[in-house]
Image 1 (cartoon, rainbow, N blue to C red):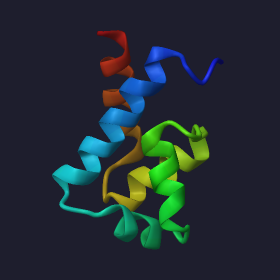
Image 2: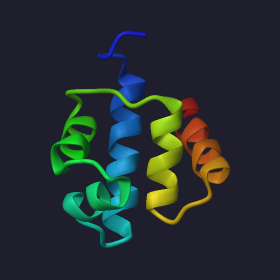
Image 3: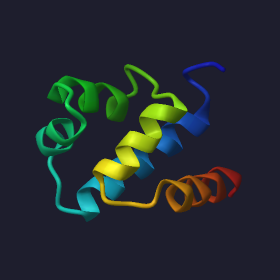
Image 4: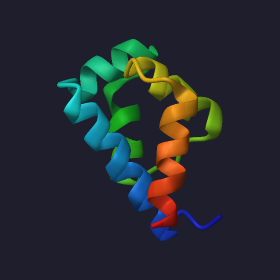
Length: 79
């Protein structure tokens, strides 16, 4: 899938909003993931895409139920 597909922008925006709604900075999320801050910055900024396993890890790091988060993301992408 093309990394410029508009659905990736929706996904990036939603993940960023979820992080901010939780009051978590990029560095804190990165720490929870065991990754550098640039990892979060790059997927939020569109410089890299994340796969399903990484998406599940992000959900857990945000204290969200992965199935629920993914279901909500699918609904967002369908709108």
